[in-house]
Length: 123
Image (cartoon, helix red, strand yellow):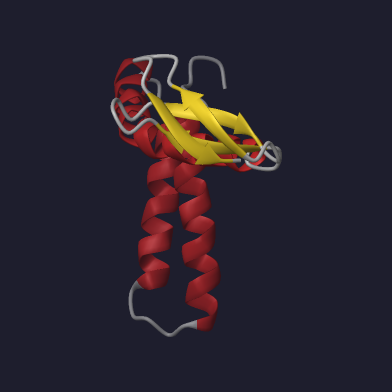
């Protein structure tokens, strides 16, 4: 593998898609699905064994740029789900800033740390 590009996140993603396509093609008789999986497998191996690391890195950068927003959104949702176990999350009516308030405190006045707007919520 000396001088070869090797695995990167785009290659891993293509391998996962190939695996899913090949499993689905075993159970669902969709014409050319198996061939599409093999073509993607060839592309993935081509990327892994390529000596042109500059182009492969450029392709990977484009992929990472595309996948960045969905990844950030999912990470935010996961973080907020963990926070919701012990806190309520409210948005400021003025500036839309997320505010974390502990559960079980009753009716309280919440002050936004960003714009200093006060509003009443039940925690």
